[in-house]
Image (tube, rainbow, N blue to C red; front, side, top):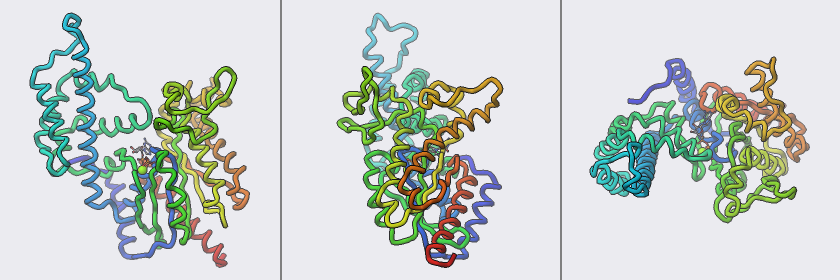
Length: 418
Ligand SMILES: Nc1nc2c(ncn2[C@@H]2O[C@H](COP(=O)(O)OP(=O)(O)OP(=O)(O)O)[C@@H](O)[C@H]2O)c(=O)[nH]1
Ligand SMILES: [Mg+2]
């Protein structure tokens, strides 16, 4: 069941595991993944566990399978409800060839699916659920409704990407012996709601890696999480999604933007956007998520917790470069609206050259914020950054290896062994 990773990939992971199994090393440093929601922190965490830690526990894998099954059921319910609404609101005389005629068993099945999915995960009749879902998705009207639903925003996109991974394999997914391949597990979008911690070893150095939830309501927890780990040498991996230039910030009703820069111009005046009043306006605030990431970066670099008494070593990971390169060509106008000062692709300029120039422009924004920060003034070190694709295991492993090495060296220097 499920596809597998390549042999070369597995061999590399196995070699790391054999080396690590021989040496049980106590963690001597802590690394914390910070960054706004959906930028790829848990993806890095999963890759690091797989390569330098114990791998995922059977329990975690089962939880992930349950999560995907629930997601598939919820999406199916939403699509079918939408289709039912559409049918109900279409007057009889307007029902034409374009309007699907569904049998009575369609509505009965939706009711039954809802009844089953309301049961706790353990009591659910997965076999029946699978039968119903296969039947419903064979209905062309269901597929068409799904394609037309087009949820907006980053979270909806990520959810849809997870759904699409399994939409043609519902029978397989609900089979009692279904297992996820490593690649599938890495790619599933499962938002972090608390704090996840793992231990690992790289080149005989033990570390603890901490993954936190990045959505706005979880960001308030960051300080106390950092503070509670300050007894050990520490490093921060600050992640940003390059692809966030396409997305608006999502705010909950009643919430005011925490970030003064998330403003809109109205009649020549600048004002902060607020969630309840400006839902439509928000959608027009292009690049708001990337701007929010820069504000967040500035906030961390000037925070007491990361600069006092000594600056905590920090690296910047500009992630999702694959999506950035892809989407830059689908709609370059969005990027150039957010980054007015970056010229569009020039006549003589190659594709890769143009993409690199745009990535450089984003990086410079973060570098500039770094140069002006309290962190940089105190550490007097240039910013360390990487352009990454967290879904690439080898890339993540190599960066982490280098970072652990540099953190250990920095600690040796501070301890007077340099
Ligand atoms: N194409 C692509 N997808 C990525 C990359 N990094 C992460 N993803 C996907 O982006 C989605 C979100 O990643 P997560 O790791 O869950 O994000 P997070 O930062 O942990 O988000 P929170 O838990 O909400 O704070 C997942 O479906 C990942 O597979 C990347 O470099 N390229
Ligand atoms: Mg996460």
